[in-house]
Image (cartoon, rainbow, N blue to C red; front, side, top):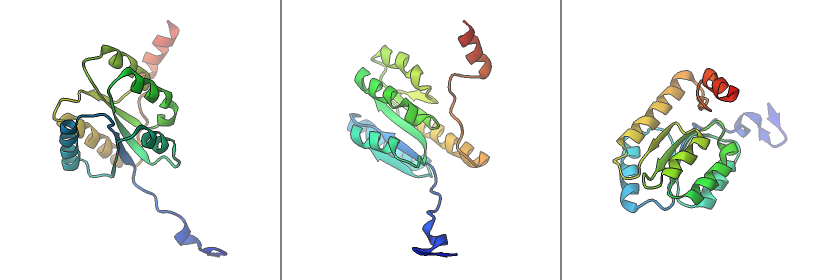
Length: 163
């Protein structure tokens, strides 16, 4: 059917595949190179790399949210607080964190974000790439984005809420 602005069929944007967004501001160049290598070898879907806080905040707030997974490098408590403040914008997105082992408070605060996976920044990132690949395979097999875990099973949540 034609519309005043043209053909209606061409005006609807094709559905884009969900993306994996990596926000790695402040990560050492050597680690970034290893991460890029593993992601390039193992991830077949679209990957978006962000290196600035402002760019990440704009991207996570943008609609429609075509993001399936977000990988975040969090170096300090200030960055963790910024990410926790954006938690509502990441409600239906799988979250993978790259956290330093040097600051135990980061792991303690990470529980607020309910990440699917946490890894250190000094590894070779094969395990991270395998986790991302598994998330993508599962998403394709069920035909939609998976709902992220928010606090464990319903029985676990009930037991925590009851006391």
